[in-house]
Length: 178
Image (cartoon, rainbow, N blue to C red):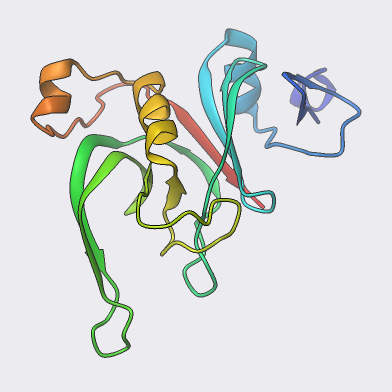
């Protein structure tokens, strides 16, 4: 059973998941399965403002991020990437409240829940601090690496034409937690 499985209670420390660490990641049954099968998955730690790409129990790369700031908190939970596009215009907020934004050509966008995404941000350098409107901001070159690493992959023509990809099957898991 899951409660007696040796991977329950794993934590991300160093380059491998192991027990006895103080940083914890989600331990849902499906995540334990992903770890056992070597599946790619993304851990987003909102407290530490980090994103770590895993293949099974191996931490492949880690990055500083900027998640949602006060009043625009990033959603937490277990998700899968549901859409990808190499660049798009993002807008939102309220003109009346002075929070309106319209940013063209936001790069390396990967949606994981509703309108929450992981994407590149070249309009600030506040990585390590929660300052976004709810999305997970990364340095552009790091967002590109993650976009190319995460499943499903996109061919060069789709990237060049900013074609939207909506995965029909499994895609990379995204675990977001405090």
